[in-house]
Image (cartoon, rainbow, N blue to C red; front, side, top):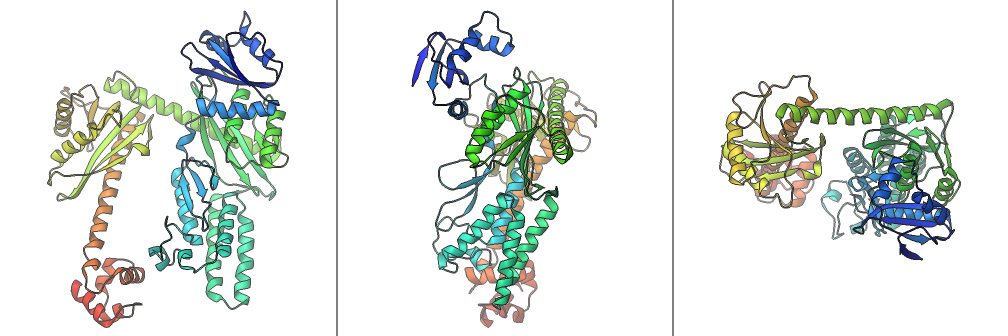
Length: 583
């Protein structure tokens, strides 16, 4: 049932969710209640104790309520509606969509993907806040277990030819055998590493007993790889039965850092950090409650136990809901001694460090605003650079920093059209092309280019031509780290130990790294395309065989005709063609 009204009169004495609107019809708050009538009436008292309630009610115009069968149902509905509408005065898990998940697809022969979009299909693990780490993990698992990566199974691909895929498209592995591999990957993301190793050891012994020594060697290498990863990345806590999440918070001025450390089979398997926004007027108990409600609300592993650094209200309600999600009993505890207390203190310390780093970064932006005499805080900073060798394979890069941190979703490469070498003209082209995209990619608060007065003058000319002179721009000269600003006779000098200068250096260095990486990639592609592909008799299979055996083009150039002819699939004549091409 759902209805809209202006006052709390005649509300039912039943559990449910209430939705508050302002005069424009925008949802400003969503709450749950064991008793709708009693809970909502508390907002309409003459004297309101809490600042948050006072502010909320100053914007209140009307409310809607939805009756549920139980308080637990109200809890679930509240979390769903908060995620959907993101009301201004609710404590919210901030920017959840920016974090990727790992997905096992529900195809006949599943793939392993990194995605930010969750659908009803497939199995998901995450979210993972360290994007680089999750990419490495997925890459490691793909190569370790040789699962397919191609979208369309239309015949053996390059990976199968260089022994990185079992080629289910070619019938080289059965669906049952492939499913066993996927089960191992599932166990990996659940943290059950010892189970994977135990199963692999049994398979290795069985293969050896059947004299399948090649298969046994492959499994042996898989075991060694997993044990190496375990040794490097996980802290052992001795108790193999531990299945816990440790949660702690550190409150800042406008938001809260939440740390969650998952423990699986007695090992710390990672650490994720999140921000909770809209928390200025909420107690730590309310913030932790909101985090647990929103974090475990969708496609996440629910552990047997959750450890907190302080107790929370309505703990029993959360435990009942989490137990339903898990399928058996879940406990929320505040440890008082021993290993569990040390874990909570560790999580708390991590949260405080991140909050301190956030504060330092904000201070750096404030310092930057002061030194550069900017009208507003430079929350979005963009850096630009050019990379080329004598004008060849010339590329430009744009990197973007948001609140002092790289925002890689806004990075962009440009293939330069200006003939070179002419770095000034190329930078002019780069800035012009980027700033013409302002409708789809909003303008930054500050532009940083690598160079001194000359480069800055050229860049200011671009802004003038595009009527964008209101965008602040600086040149950072590398030799003495001098900062040049428009219409100033002398450069600005920021002390070497100042965080504002460190931030500008990071932007400049990152734009250089991003440009040169792309430049090397283009050069590498060109080298491969211009040599082997041009040799008579060298097709796709022979090219792969040569690269697999010799590793790179340089080694192929050094090889003799006899060495080339020994390669699988090579004839004497083709070997001579290769040798003669390079000599």
